[in-house]
Image (cartoon, rainbow, N blue to C red):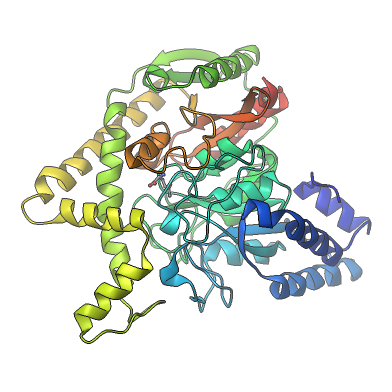
Length: 479
Ligand code: GLN
C-alpha cells in the first residue's frame, strides 16, 4: 500500500475507480495491524463505523455523484474527542469504559465531509503532558525513531499520520499538544485561533485554552481539514461567527514582502544547538522567498510557563470535578459517599492528573486566589498584548516549536518541571488565543525532526497557512 496518501490522492483514486473507499479503509487497517502493536498510536478501532461510511462513499462514486471534500479519507481522532458509540477514554482509567452518547461537532463535520474514521488515538491522560507517557494505556513511540517519544499530548494522532496509519487526524492543543507532537513526528500540525473550531464534544482540560486542530502530511491537507472543521457552532458559545475563508484558495500566492517577526526571547538558553541551526536555516528559506525579517521583542515571554500552569491547572481542577463515580465512568464502591469519591478518584486518575488537581485547587482557594490565579490572569493579558503589539509591526512570527528534538522514552518522566519546559515556545500563543502551525524544518542527524512554528494574528489562519505552504514548497522540510 502507498503510505503517502494525500487528500487529493484519495479523491483522484476514488474518482478514477483505482480503489474503493472500502478497499482503502481495509488497507489502512492492515497497516495498523502490522504497526500499532509497536507504536501504540491507536487505542480503539471503529471498523464498523468506518466501513459503513466507506460504503456510503462508494455508493456516491457508483452513482456518479459529486464527492464531498474529504470523501473516503481515512482519519484518526484523539481520544479526548467524543464519538457516539465509540469508547472515549481520555487516556485515563477513570473513563476506561465510557461510551459517549453523541459526536463532537468536529467529528460530525469531518464525517459529513466524507471522511472515514478509523479509530481513536492514544494521548496523555486528559491531554496533560508533552510526551504521551502519561497515558494509562502505555506510551506511544515516535515512528521516526522508536526509542523516542512522539511528543504530546496528542502523540497518538501525530504518530498515526507520520507512520501512514491515517491520512489526517485531529488532536487538541491547550499549551502545545498539537504543534509539539507535529514537530517531534516531522509533520505539519495546526492550532487555529481560540473560537475558530467548535469545542463541543471535546472533553475539557482547560476550557479557556483548549482547541481542536489537524495533523496531516502536507500543509495543503492541514488546510483542507481546517476548512471543514472551522466555523460557528451553536453548541459552543465561544465559537466565532467570523466567516471561514477558503484556506486552500488562499495558498500559492507570492509571499514576497511579507514581514516576519523573529522574537529574540524564543532563542534563549535551554535551546538545543541542533534545533537552533535548523531554525536558522528555515528562516533563511523565508529570506530567499523575499520575506522581510525583523527582530522583535516580546517582553512577557519568560512568564508564560508559570502563567500557563496556574491557569490550566485551575481550570482543570474545576473541569475534572465531574469524575466522581456517580455521573461518568469508573466507580469504586465504599461505605460512605465521601469514601466512594475518594476511592474512585484515587484509583481512576494517574499521578500527573492528581498533581494538577491539587495545584489547581490550591491556586483557586481562598487566600491564594488573588496571589496566584488573579495575577496569572493579569500576566496572561500582558502576553496577549505582546502579540497584539507584535502584529502591529509584522505579519507573522516565526519561532522554533520546541527547544529540543524528540527525547528518549523515560528521559523526562521523573522531573515534571523538565517536562513542562518542553512547551516554552508554544504556551505563549495558547494564552494569547492566536493561531499557530508547526511545519517540518529538517532533521538533526537525519532522524530527529525539528519543527518551525508560525504564529499569526487572531483569525489570521489563511496567512499562516500561506506562509507554511510557501515554506514547504521551497523545500523547508529538508533544510
Ligand atoms: N504539555 C502541556 C501540558 O501538559 C500542554 C498540553 C496540551 O496542550 N494539552 O499541559
